[in-house]
Amino acid sequence: MIPDLLDGMRFETLIAQDSLPQLCSAADRLRRIAQHSPEALGPDGLTLLDELLEAAAAAEQSIALQRARIRFLESLSVTDELTTLLNRRGFETELSRALARARRMDEKGLLLLCDLNHFKAVNDTYGHQAGDAMLRAVAKALKGSIRESDYVARVGGDEFAVIMTHTAGEESEFLARKLSTLINGLTVPWQASLLPVSASFGMATYDRRSQPETLIFLADQDLYRNKRPQLVASEDLG
Image (cartoon, rainbow, N blue to C red; front, top):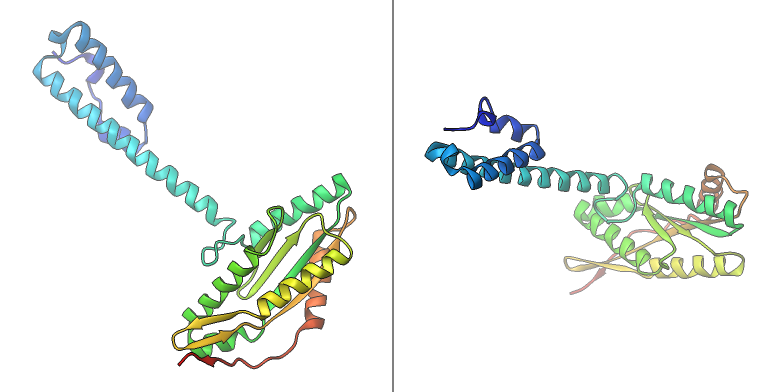
């Protein structure tokens, strides 16, 4: 006969509640009963044991999918989906950590802001897919030009930020000029055209006394001073 432990058991309810430990425990108890007293289960009990094992496998798969989804959503909370860079939240987190290290280790560093010039005109003229292609190209160039200890983020629609740790003095200015030259030298292939990238940069150095709001304000002010108009033009590939 079927053991009392199966009475009233609703496998679908356990699955819906993601109660995999209970399912596995019940399956294990049934296995032991079947090993020591096969007659205690009988044909119906063995059939039910198979159903229980299938239910446990289904519950395990459901839980694995849910955990994968949770990991994906957690990654989205600090990652920009289009460029795979840090998003605004991720940027603020890393900036806080960088400034905390600066206070603790008496370090110096650099915050660099990048704003694409007339990006709206690119979307209006060539479409949003062209704009997305330009954003991905800029993100790839920035990410490929920083050190492992640095961070790059997309903090707005066409705005990027780079946190450079262990950087001070003339090195800061050199790195800022290097990235500016790199980004402003980019062209993005789009259909039969090459779209040139135009960007303005602003920078501010930080040390152990720096606060995030003030640092961002100073870099933003420098960016505003360096803003320069440039018409959007394309080069014909044909």
